[in-house]
Amino acid sequence: MSSPPGAGRSRPWIPGQPLVEREPEPEPTSGFTVGVLGLQGDVLEHLKALRRAGAIARVVRREDDLAGLDGIVIPGGESTTIGKLLDRFDLLEPLRKAINDGLPTLGTCAGMILLATDIEGSDQPRLGIVDITVRRNAFGTQVDSFDTTVEIEAIDGGPVPVSFIRAPVVTRVGEGVEILAEVDLGPVLVRQGHAVAAAFHPEVAGDDRMHRWFLDVIETQTAQ
Ligand code: GLN
Image (tube, rainbow, N blue to C red; front, side, top):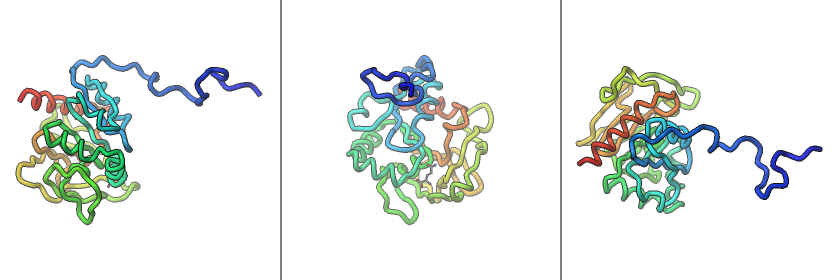
């Protein structure tokens, strides 16, 4: 039997190519450092989209990682799992404080649910920052997931291709919350000052306009 590649080196052999070296990192052109909460969910795709949009992007897993960020993305995944892990990693309070203190935030899908103050029929752990009520899985289960385009007035260049994957919908919008996009079922993109919540995944179709727009949100918030 031949030995696996790398046998005899001090590091254990792991099959396959290291992910970190797979793609050259684009030059960060915006100068902003954006974290992606990396406990569970669609972390890698957001990191890539942010880098293509010109940000320095890094994973956030512990309280120390929050230092020096200009913005943060809370990805889609499973909001109950991410909420429990936030609690277990002692990150729920520090992250809530950082966002309440003004850290520009984009929550997508499960991230929207975690940002919402109210979740229909659930007392799951959450950040509870954006004054909205959300209904989880409003578009159906995994088999009902779909790709579509959404008209977002704030974003130029035509409707944005996005994916709805067991997506929530907003069923109540509090005062001070702007609706930025809406579909038949209700609002799917809302903004409360520096906190933006999207029901869909903008990071899978390879169109980075939403991430570029989020860098603009960071820029305007930072200038204030
Ligand atoms: N349905 C999931 C939840 O309720 C969210 C799905 C997603 O983030 N794609 O947490």
